[in-house]
Amino acid sequence: MVLKLIFSFKKKHYLIGLLLFSTLSYGQLLEIDYTQGKREESSFRVQLVRTGIVGVSSLQHLDLTLEALKLRYDAKNGNHYAFTLYGTQTLWRGNRVDALNTFDFLMNPTGGAINGTLFFSFPLSQKELQHTKIGLSVGKKWIQGQPLPSFQSTSFFDNYGRLGWIYQSTLADDALTNSSLYFWTFPSLIVHQGTEASRKQFFDNQLDPFSYGYALELGLEYNTQLKVTLIGQQLLNNDPEGDFGRFVARLIVGYRF
Image 1 (cartoon, rainbow, N blue to C red):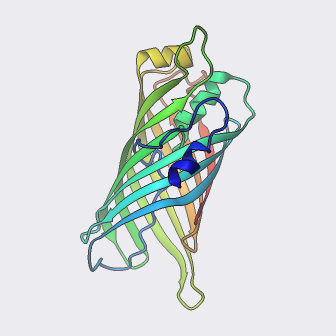
Image 2 (cartoon, helix red, strand yellow):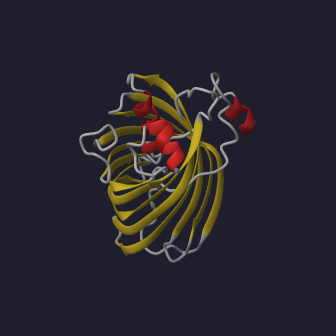
Image 3 (spheres, rainbow, N blue to C red):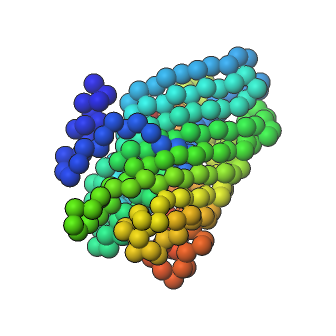
């Protein structure tokens, strides 16, 4: 059933594929830690077709993402490990520049026809209503770019990573009404790496094969189901006046089934 959903996800051009591999929560929505106090035991969970995500960016993209698979391990000592598999389909492109349309997938945390993420977090401090952690994620995206002449490949891989500090706070948690509200922020350093050939073909050599920059993520989660995230990102070793040195903002709304 999952494979049927995935294969029907993309009707034009090529199949969205098996959604089998990628990394880092650059590509991953941040997981909230609901524990209050010390965790009593470790846990491992497998979740299928768990979250639907709608995103809109300052690059004039509207897209829909399916979180198809999540493997999650929470250790007793507070460490968190997860692998997540995403697939993203563009719903609307308001930008007429092909390279910027492709760049949107590269900068989208859950972007790419296939996006798999490994995410790790390690606790720094833990209070009843507040958590601070170190967050690290690494991954790989399979991105479908603009059509190219002479039957050249229209897709490429992007490797990416993110390292930062996570602050999470419980704003409201009422067991009687079964309602909760959480806030988090995740400032981080980011990297993207691709081949020189793909940078030349899809970005006219204006994007460095190894690009680095920063990101700032702010989010709210309501009742453990509705998650709203605002992310701002910028790559720093590209021309700040060029297309790929600009600040990119993205609003993401995710709903857990």
